[in-house]
Length: 256
Image (cartoon, rainbow, N blue to C red):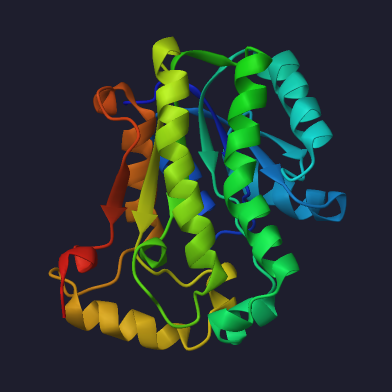
């Protein structure tokens, strides 16, 4: 098992259909001990039931756009688990209207919100984790991104801009944290039916196009993305940092 006895923090789990859950399941199957963050104390019972299958897992409420929440999170994790070996950033949000209107109609507030929640949170999480000395040597940070960061995908709009900012942040964070042996990467997952994807207009048509055009002629699953995340968390990817690794059945290589 490639993550045996490693402690991994999964940030942003919502339900069994989320990529975060796929990452958690893969990490657990590879021997990791898990802890989780979720939004909203009123969701605690639902999240605790969701993660009950992972022995010894704990859930912490955390709004990653609030510095005090991040600081308290890592203090609590350090008290409960000691140092950790990896963080999976599964946090993203944009206002619904920003995804339904043309990109040119993006509001200043909507632009700032999407970039703050979807990109800057990784920066602040990495900073607090380092400054509070929560990360073990050779720890790995993995974020989730999407092909809309590099290509125009109808309906993705400001989230594409936010994911582009996230990917650029990953390269700078990899440089900053590299001397401490800490790696930072992203997995660019193909489209998957999740609660978040419901906000993208005509999402089902994207699934159809990927199935038709991708070299492997199918859509990716959350389990496959989870396996890719587990690999990036493990020492088997020890020489990889600052990268965006695609798990999309090859769709990104196609020109038409």
